[in-house]
Length: 424
Image (tube, rainbow, N blue to C red; front, side, top):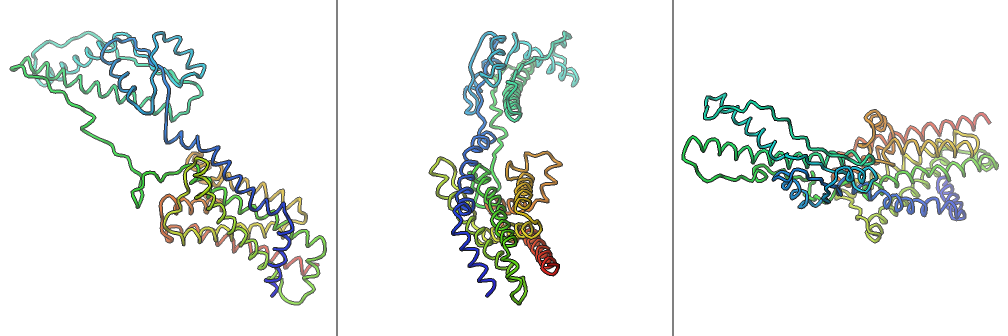
């Protein structure tokens, strides 16, 4: 009966506290929506790279034309031609464009001559001396790329790789042409063969999904809804610690001690009530992810097929959050101490656990430390369920860690509370 009475008392306190209700439900919902909107563009930047670059083609040969045509047909790169390289660099430096590609004069001629020398050298080494090798030194073709100083590193890599691929395709085709031309002098000339090297090897990109769903990837919604749900659940310590310490200061806790029986019922009652509040928070956040996010132009939250696993993860996170809040409540003497330490510690655990940004963009050392955060355990479990459609067995390690964390914090808080009861 003590447990039920405690639950009833806590529910009355919450209903009368409009600020607490807003902190529980309205603030987390607003937070997850705002953060999803803010981080939507950065998440899309990693997945949908679009660049606007300048091209200064001083070559006037087929190499320059091939590069220009290749980028003109790209969905991710918009090319603007310019004649003056100094003016183009100035525009890039000012941030008007992301980069400028500068193709030097006589690049096509130099590349063809370089290829001709290489083929002749190969034929000479295998004993086919149909023409003397060219001993002149041909410098390498230096194609320049000047980037905006504020450009992201992944953009520079993407553009450089794309340019290198186009040049490699040109080199391959010209080497084939040169081979046919030099071999044709040793036999009856035949029509040249043109080979589309892009059709020789194709790289097909897919995401590892049980349902072959390539659209299911980490985006702002899939990251922010579970991340900020966990964050909001851990902030349950504010009303939990506040009410607990207030009861202790006002003498309500002393009157409860005078009633015969174990004080475990008081701890269990508070834990049960705030556990239920955390579960309700999680349910509301999931509803927002599924129904509200698409209304504001974001992706819809995908839960995966393991609904039981989602419920178990939500329960384990709620247990860990409530246990941590209970420990903060019984350990500190004043509300100011409890709330100050509690809020700072939750923010640190959230930052470590990948709530602010995904762990894979953190430094390697911080990635290892992040594995110690209970918020990371919950987030990893949700990611496994939502993105990888994992089984309950796959998320069992995270569930056990969250449950163990909850048991430890509740046990410690019970003994602290009991020792104070005996001491007083």
